[in-house]
Image (cartoon, rainbow, N blue to C red; front, side, top):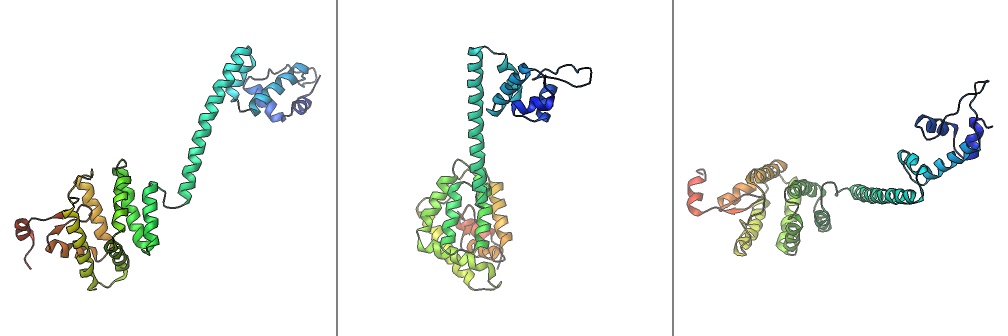
Amino acid sequence: MLTISRLAAYAGVTVRAVRHYHKIGLLPEPERDRSGYRTYDAAAVVRLIRIRTLADSGVPLARVQELLAADPEEFADGVQEIDKALRAEIRRLQDTRSRLARLAAGEHLALPQSVVDYLDRLRGLGVEERYIEMERDAWIMIAAQVPHAIDAVIAKKHEELDDPGTVKLYSLLSGALDWPADDPRIVEVADLMERLMVRAVEAGEAGADDGIDDQFVDLLDSTMVESSPHAARLLEILEERGWRGWTRIERVPADRLNTELPPA
């Protein structure tokens, strides 16, 4: 007859594991002998080895008892079912690892790959990191609002970056974070933006339905204004010229422009 430590050694497990299997009912617990010790026989060694083999193969302990009592057909079906669950869990863990790897890259938190690529392109054009961070935060909010359309929006932004005027605008906006409050280059920024706005109107792209509600547009615009000391002045200049908005640019009709602008 075997002591618990010898049983554990023969089966290749720890004494602690044997006691755990007793506790959850996988391994019958023998009565104590007259000396107060539990002793085990060969059948206990065999059962314990089978338990260990199933557990080491990935079978959940909650299913081990069922498989130990199964006939060959039931055993095969049970193993297939467990294998299917394990494969699903592997796919879930692989997806989790992929997400973690993307998060480790920095920009991927709450951003689709298309936006990350776009921000990287801005970096390649020399746009300062502080300005890119502002854009990143705006794109995080936009992507959450229109996830179905974000890739198409970004594709359009890439087309715009093929225009030297757009590249120059980004360069100016990036550097504007350090401009003094009265820097005259803000007028150059307004000129560039107006030319791009006129082009968008002529192409029928301005005022299109973007799937974003007006309150969210106001949030993005106010965030932009708060982020730069020059943003409010830039919007004032553009509105004086008949344009309104930043996220959703609109042409202000001449009659409304005359009545709505405050007196000089």
